[in-house]
Length: 555
Image (cartoon, rainbow, N blue to C red; front, side, top):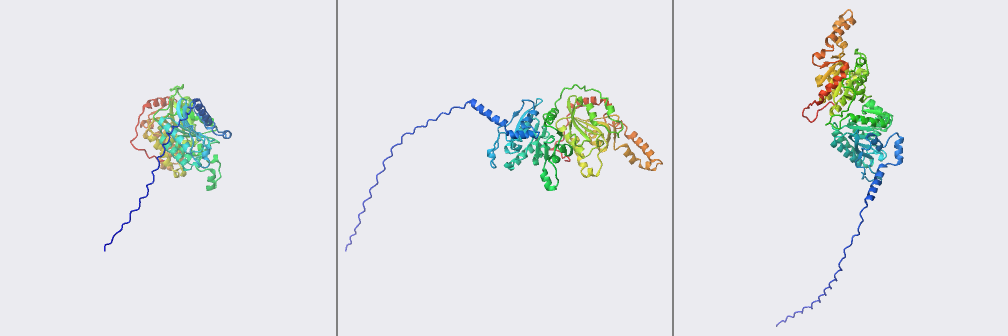
């Protein structure tokens, strides 16, 4: 049986949908025609600049300016005007503003950010200066504020010109946090880098607390004004909380404290005007940098002028005191000198003066204060001054009338050996012209330390009244002739005889000269002429130090 297979017919295909009709082409786009912006009118731009500058110069509210004046303080720009030659100031980054946010800072963005920076001239010589403006954020230091100071310090270093800071600020700006602290670090690093390269002068015209106080301490000279300047690491409130001691701002860190007790301040004044006038005078005595000599000025004081008054000023009796300042006045040009640290460690005098119109550094014992003995503070004061003079090519004249180092338990326990060694190191390391002048006493280690020939003085002169010895005749006789004195029928008569014998044998005026330790014994009235001619000879002195990274002084 045949089976017939039936196939199902395929279903009819679904009709293909019709293709969409092509879209009509979009009409061509018409290019937009830019609306021309009229160029700014230069007159309008200049007017806008003048408006901004007027805002800049009037920064700080009238009330803030009035409050500044009520405290007896000048504004930042008033101070700069007093310091610099009239019309010489060129401001740097006057339009700088902070970029801090939070605590309402974004709504307060005054120009200058509380510090005025720039350069000008003092007696025609370039000087860089920055001045904190207490009327703006209390003169506090923030990021932009610090950046302006860093820029100016770098410019001063590169230009080889002195830097003067007029400090009147409230420290780090709290609203900017650690950024402000980093700003201080940049200042300290630049202070250290420029040390001995350009003169750095700090003028304290307001409060300076905490870490901010370290910048002035790193500079060459610190000026303060009574009643407005204070410097301390921790304020009176912290001192009272920690120790229970109550003290005022000035009692803790005022001008008189630092000028007379701590030695932080080189100078102290009653007014800002007097202070800034002396800053100008100091700058006139200093070179612009360590590659130049201090400026020479014409003088009407004859270089060979005799000084007969010196014979009367200095008593022949070594036990009788006198004022060394009177001696200095007789010797230097026109009797003028500029004393540094006048009220601190007054038993030694450190001063800048001129001989034959050229700057010279004077270090002299002061017999009217503690007999001119060397102690810890006198050693530190002198060492710092010697280093400053050596850094800035200022010749040194050391005037001796010294009975030795101060004996005592406190001095020994507080480190007189270490501190005295600072002065010794400073002299031994100095390469400028060095002259020693011995007026009367020059005893023991103090004679050696005070720039003796044995530690490198170029020349040593002595007056006929000089006494150079290990110790005074009285002490020496008591040691050497102790048995003779004790065994004598009349010990006092024997002591007097032995003192006279020792003095005639080892302490006569020519003993050191005979052994080449003194170059000449001179007539005191010829002192000015001898010093001036000797300094003129040494003007071309050249001395090299050993190749080394740096020494390791007993700091």
